[in-house]
Amino acid sequence: MRAATISRKTKETEIAVSVDLDGTGAATVSTGVGFFDHMLEQLARHSLIDISVAATGDLHIDQHHTVEDTGIALGQALRQALGDRAGIARYANALLPMDETLTRAAIDVSGRPFLVFKTEFRRAKIGEFDTELVREFFQAFVMNAGLTVHIETLYGENAHHIAESCFKALARALRLAIEVDPRQKGAIPSTKGSLAG
Image 1 (cartoon, rainbow, N blue to C red):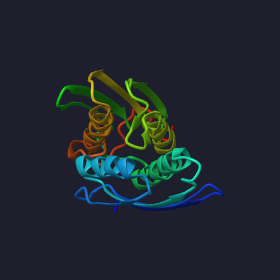
Image 2 (image 1 turned 90 degrees about the horizontal axis):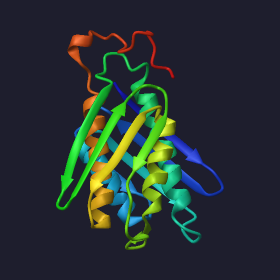
Image 3 (image 1 turned 180 degrees about the horizontal axis):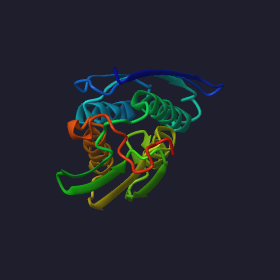
């Protein structure tokens, strides 16, 4: 079973995360940050990964620690659930339209974390959510999951649509990249014989 649970506690946040890579996209998310909860629900739904997140943080200061630390815990859970990554497709990409916005994401489940994020927001906030936290989440998630991820918004106007298209594009690419490919016959998809990084 490709599933994992991670608990993380610091002076700033307390987070419990569970993932099931072979789920149906079910999400149970509570971070205290409404827009972020909505984005995590999109990540679950469109990757078909069951995701549970319960997070409390120092929101009286700002949302940064809660968002970043959730990315850390979620990335760690994904990495653990993937195990040695045997049999997976490994590479995938997605082109995601959302009304006037178009975003693409490409992923390599390589064990070597790297993020390229080429997305600009014309507004600093979506409601009470700081748009700069979109990148902060992806950076924390990618580094702890051991993924190489490129996300680029080709064009768009609405900040909500831009952020949501980023999460959905990553979700769609992730869904394809972590699928078990029967033609791999359980082999690790690397000529090195390892995707440990």
